[in-house]
Amino acid sequence: MKKLAKSILLGSVIGLTSSFAMAQTQSQGEVTDQEFVIRKDRVLTVPKQPRVYEKLPVLPQPKGLTDFNYMVNKYPLTLAPLELETTPIQKPFRAPQLDLFPGYVKLGYGNFESPLLEARFMATEAEEVNYSLKFGHQSFGKGPVQRNQSAESHTNFGGDISYFADLFEIFGGADWSQDKYSFYGIDPVNFENPDFETSDNVLNSIFVKAGVRDIEKVGPFSYEAQVSYRNFKDSYSAKENEIGLAATGIFRPNEDWKGQVGISYYTTNPEDFNYSKTRNYFAIRPELTYTLEGLRLSAGLNLVSENDSIQDKSSDFRIFPNLKASYQFAEEFGFFGEFSGDVQRNTYYSFVNENPFLGPSEQLLNTIQNYKVEGGIEGQFQEVFQYRAAINVSRYNNLSFFVNNYYIYPSASDSSRFTLVYDDKSTVFNINGELGFKFSDFYTLGTRLDLYQYDLNMQEEAWHKPTWEFRANNQFTPFEGLLVQANLNFMGGLKARRAEINTGGTFDNYEVVKLKTIADLQLKADYQISNRFSVFAVGNNVLNGKNTRWLNYPVRGIQLIGGVSMKF
Image (cartoon, rainbow, N blue to C red; front, side, top):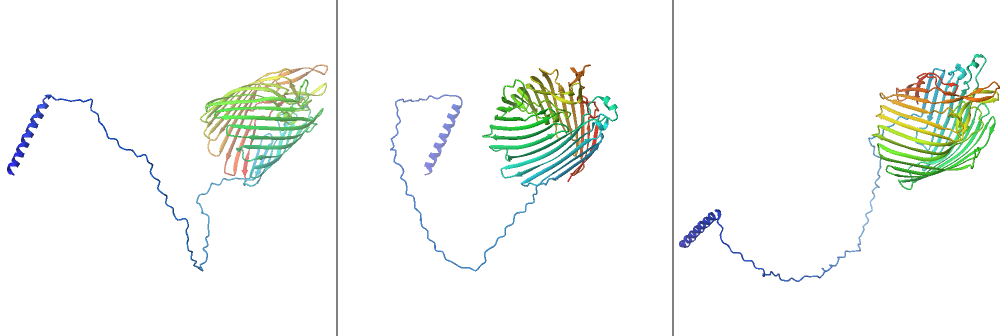
């Protein structure tokens, strides 16, 4: 054994020595000769294995027991039934309650002997029946001409009532108003007579309405229908009764499409010094609107029938297009356009609201707007700055104007009253622009500029209509509770007509009178002392201008009024 171990040890040492010597030789870069044999004809084969194509057998599903039989044993007990008392959870959260006051009173007084009273009362609870009442009075005991000879007063009283059902509302209302004016626009020489007094005119109007409308305005269908009656008369021969019916239906098949149809019918019975007639007005206005993101298209018709009698009138029935389009590329820029026509309904009541010094008129006519073409741009920047600019051209028949000198008899005139004249074919060009600015809740500005040009056929000038207007409304909130408003109004280019009487006592021609530019600055301030009480101050015509909107009728100078208001 010892010899065998020695032999193995000796062989191991010799092998390691040879390996070390060979490694050192190869590390010196010597390449040994080697032989590689490549055989192309050698084929590797794998024995074929049989494949099983048989499907796995479906094992039978175990069937459970379908019938269960239980034995119920009765154990009669004499225990009383358990009684549970449920109580609602008292949440600590409470919604904030707004201070709602049903009543409001405003009292004030100013120069020109001008008391002011306003009162309102309304229901504040969410009941099925809701109502509101209002009353207002403001008078001026002294005016711009001969003090009490140009006095003026305004009074109105009315109310509204509504009944709310689940799906609709039945509403109604009544309003009474009385306005008193003095015809002080006469020759100043007449006031040299101490016994001379101006004539007054009291305008009384009663209006009643009733109707029904749906409550949900965003559903697939909306509707509203109303019947109304108005009675109007003045201190002389003018009076007018009006019955009106109006209904509107709106259909919304989806968010993009909307269709609506408006129907209105009015019959009026005006009577004047030498005029009495029944006037009828009926209109149907279907319209279809499509909205897709910033695009809005509207197409409709205005079908109107009215029975005013004018020379060379071919028919009482007229059809006008009503096409509108607008596209908002972005919030900052968009454009709009319109091509339409209509019949503007005029009544003695609407004319006297525009000019309260209107006297007897020969005839009342509606204004026919044959077409109106308008285009413009609009946009806003981050809800801070808004703008709008447009140009439109309108063609009219029977455009109305107010002129002085109503003829009492052939050799005299009354410059204190106005009468109506019409132009058979008129074209009006208008360029307008609006700018708005809002700086948080601290300051808000709104302005508008209008430029007009008139192309007339029968009338020499556009009597008492402006060629330009500018309005700027400013609102400040310096701190909580104080509201300040400054409104500036300019109107220029007014022209009036004055008759010239020759030696024979007849009217040969008319003198064109250019009225001065009207500049009116109005200031308002309202300070809330508490939730119930506040004080206010108003200044009208602060620039104290001799403004004359109608020939021979200057307005009051600077007029100040102050007072308090209370909620209860």
